[in-house]
Image (tube, rainbow, N blue to C red; front, side, top):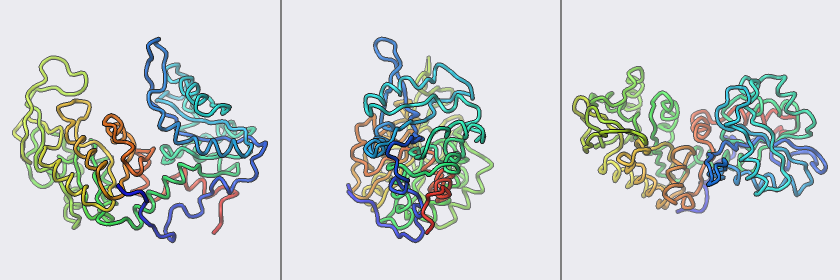
Length: 399
């Protein structure tokens, strides 16, 4: 496994003109608002109390919080948690996160759940005014939500001296260099359920990578575009032509040559009850009623081989229905290959990160992004609303 990120040219770097912590005015004795992404998984302990189950996102913010504290700032963090619908919801109180933050960074305050307020997601100027009231500076340390034009992400830089946090700046630098001048061969492995969610990033990657490996449920739309019979596997008919165009683009696009399929009438998932049905390893053509739910062992080995020989690897998205153990082997094989790769490895957040955590492989990845959706948006567009907002801040470098 490599220990350094691929070199990148500065000319097109998305980090250019991004204000850093050192670009802030003196914060000694000043109040600083930090937008973090503490949307962490929760669990119940033996006493029935809700606690943080995985503090990875909290720990990634600590270098920024430490720097601000060492420079005399009074720090308040704001974040969302879960999916409350614009009003207070006790299920999504920040209290479990507040307790863990106090353990990791004593003295740092944490506000209420941002999404308890309807103005957060609508970027209401009045809510922005409420957020920044009493603060002297703002830091965005929430790469995972910087693809959202929400009040706490894009509003404060219009009103306060602002900066990118340490982790956010690192995310931008790593992903930017990866897309600008990666060590080749550059291999991207993309999984997930919907072509609709990822066709844009697949098209962007096709212009960048040497090998593009596609798995997950969305692979069946590509197989259908090639004329294969895919049984009752998910096919997004409206994207068939875009898939054909991508297949004709000249990119070396790898699709499953075998799949693990579930028999007609079978059930799947973590809580499927009753008869679950037989599974079978099939080729690229599935009989009527059979549903492909994982890449097969042959495909797993092919994907693993190209990963092993890559100079740069980007992986985002599971290759099968990992909640059901019968359809998790493909994702495990890819995770193991990425962890053992000699090239520079980058893994998007979300399900890919959870798979690595469950397998104990996280420490063997060169860079684990804190943002699943944000990392894909960044790969597709080369910028995010939160980054653009920081570059417009009054203290941002002008050249």
